[in-house]
Image 1 (cartoon, helix red, strand yellow):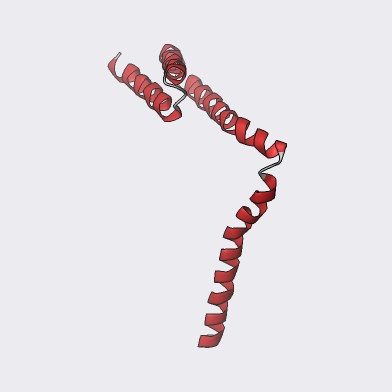
Image 2 (cartoon, rainbow, N blue to C red):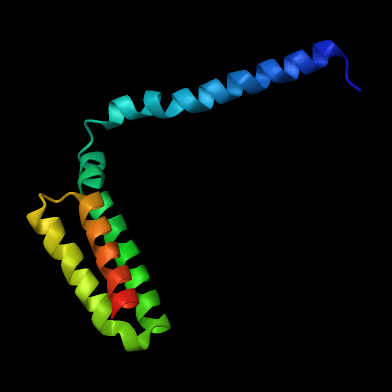
Length: 108
């Protein structure tokens, strides 16, 4: 068993590494905020991630439930309409589309 000094040194080094790793992104981010590339990523990345997620989920559901394509299409349409009408609130549109899909599958 290591002595107390070695354990305290290991804890101290681990703590310093943790603090440095948590502070590093903030130190790097300051000069990058003015970068046009980073600004473009900030603008387009959320929509791109949601698009990829939607395609993967819709493909998976369409393959696993080929008889329920109408429910998938209807829920997708509800999601899009609520997103556009609801001032682009992502959580609201996702909740509406999910609720619509679950209700269509269970009630009809």
